[in-house]
Image 1 (tube, rainbow, N blue to C red):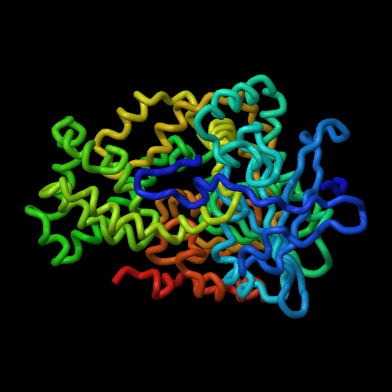
Image 2 (image 1 turned 180 degrees about the vertical axis):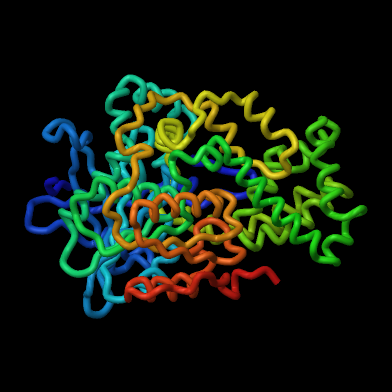
Length: 489
């Protein structure tokens, strides 16, 4: 390397890093004397006030250096106090930017005293090189695709298929390896990934040339050979967690008594009516027109999850009150995620998500929307992603030698996982951990009780204690709980 200068907007909320369309100019780093300069947006956000920014040039294809290059954006938060090392934070997605960490960066830095915190934008996201001009910060809609940008964007993607196929998980892992080598310093070194970032961290572990002292995996994705927890089974994963929530209600006398015949019987009847087409009114009253998708979305935060019995009562008895309920009760439960959209260039890359999802993390890319509809009959909680990915039209890349390859020479690993995670199911995580341990890996699992996806945002005290133990070569507690503020009253 050398120095160089899906927005999936749900009907319930602008989900996480979804739809910001404005852009703040960032400094161009030139010359070889330094990689980082003060970020031009540092004065706009208190939490970013001492951050430093850099653009690093990397080969489009690491297997063919010297040809086309891309730019990789990295933000650095210098260590507070005496420096002892560094930690590299990997965002989820694929398609999410590093800015998803910014709202909670103060907590992260408190968890890593003495560590420089590096947050890169994966290739294809944020201010790093994008898949098409329509996704760049200076395009009319910013990094989000909107309106007339879609056609030209996908035209570029197909006309430059070879370039598009270079935006793979493996090449993103090579990027991380090169960035650490180029920008990293002395001392201890860790990688922290959330969701897709955990898969990227494990791909990095397969090809890395730099040494790391450990990897932290928050909401571990299933192994690529897990045919029950891949993206094509997302609705089944969501449904499994949703039915745990229904079972909790059934076990609570007051909750169960709200439903004639009990919640499990009443819910099964409601779903049967929906599947039979007998509840067209719900299409009018439920945001997005699909109650199953809405219920699946409500599993994403403890606060919205606690409202599921209320939503069911309304759907069964007074569906006309559902729009106000979602607006006044459910949407505010997602404020934690929606706050990320305040930063520029946070728009989720639906193109990168489609490319990597269909090329690699979907075991059944041949599925059609009709296939999905048949499989979702009888499910009470579903994900729109399962259907959306059947419409993906991308020049997919071939799975390389790292796909499904066994692990070797793993560093110590800490896995943090919620037992009510509707995106990366805990059973899929346990199977993946078994693969790591079979390869000789030292893996600690901390189960966060009642936590959904991305446990850091809901159990910071637990996570900090686990990290402290891990960083000090001690075994963390096997389980912990949500932060008190995150527990529904």
